[in-house]
Image 1 (tube, rainbow, N blue to C red):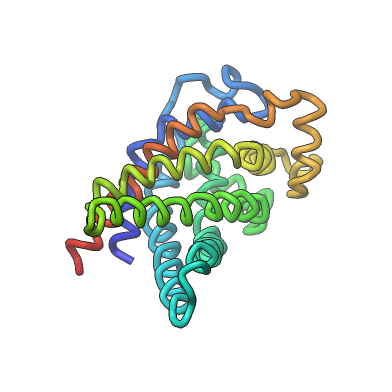
Image 2 (image 1 turned 60 degrees about the horizontal axis):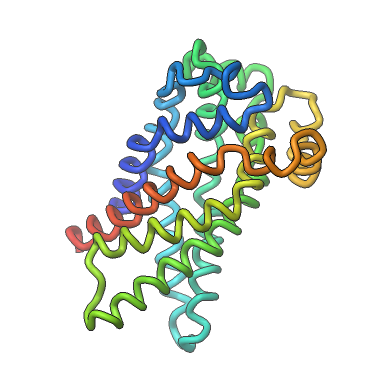
Length: 258
């Protein structure tokens, strides 16, 4: 819990400006109208509050499920074990992440409004359901992401450990995390764009229903392939750096605590 929480806070606060740029590139009104480079830390209170419990929930679930599934499983099933553990971890973590993400992204594209004002406005107009708008699209983004990232991270660590004859150090784990995160970020960008559009959609609009396929179809018809991969460069950069910081910090903190 502590290792995951510390890792989550570190990565989210350090890379927040890149996340803001990515969100504004993906917003329907376009980068400039969404704020450009102004108010680059808009929405950071929401992230600061949600980071620790979100990351802690993920790693508690991930490590426990991985431990349960490892018993009696053969080596060739190890990647599948990591996939299942990571997927369940995301489902649990998204219960905390999505409300924080909704408020954060709305603040990022409305830098003149405070986080508290956006939270109160969302609750007033949409209720608790408004804070969970995009839960399905977030899970549908995070599960494919985790299916790529975590088995790749674990496999790279195992390969590096085998090559050097001992378990990888925390910085080596961080390097593996950066590569795995960047690759997973690239291939799941269209799902991230759809999630952003759903979270930013006005109440009553077609995207507000949360239909991921409809959102993807709309983006494809209006903006084509470039629209589906909007923000892919800052997303890859943020998640590569994030993978390095997040997974490296997690391993180092866990080693210190245990």
